[in-house]
Image (cartoon, rainbow, N blue to C red; front, top):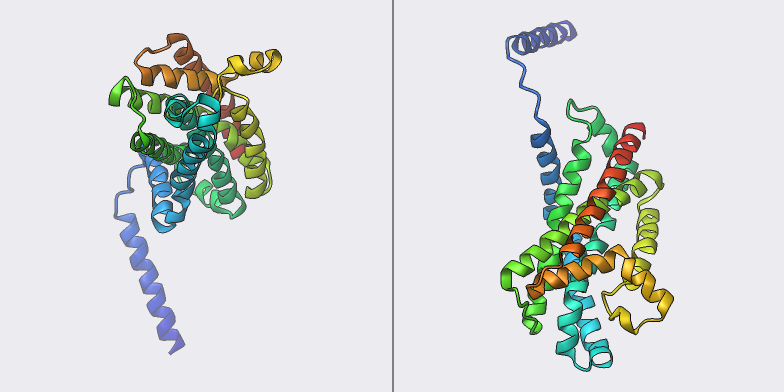
Length: 278
């Protein structure tokens, strides 16, 4: 019986080898197709665990409601006036906070061994990184859209209309894509997802609150005002306000795009190098 089984297995193995040898090898997937596939992987993770969207849906709404109705009257005299000022800034803050999770997600894949499985595949090496960030960009769009829609429901009306809101959101997403490479570096350097999250928010929180997102820098002490004026997050918030108001600030927009390009130019190669060596 064992001899017959062995003979059957040998015949099956030979048949499989003949089938493989007679079948044309599938073409190697292109770089763009591979990156988009890994981006879709991020969307499937959200599909199976929809709670992952809480940070881009519930959290931005909480920030908007709390800052508008708790501090609006004290800072601007009325909630409606403060909403007009702070909504573009909260759009920036909500989306930038989401970039921290790019590093957390990468570190999770690294510590669970998923990255090792990716390395065994015949694909373009940076594809998992780029695809992951492309998938995260969808989360950025969701977070920004939620803020704008809720703001409109509360009475906010951008002077530039839908076009201004879309342009502002697009600028924030581009900036966030550049910033997310920095958090990917953290994800590759630190040893646990919690460490990445803590380090990321320790960096992004002070920069966000020491900006013009919540208050006019003219009301701040001189040294603090000087820092706020050159803070890239302040510049980005100013650019978003100008786009929504229908009076685009070319300098602020240009600086924001330059900072995004600079972040990507510095941290994208560093991320790729660390990714290959880990």
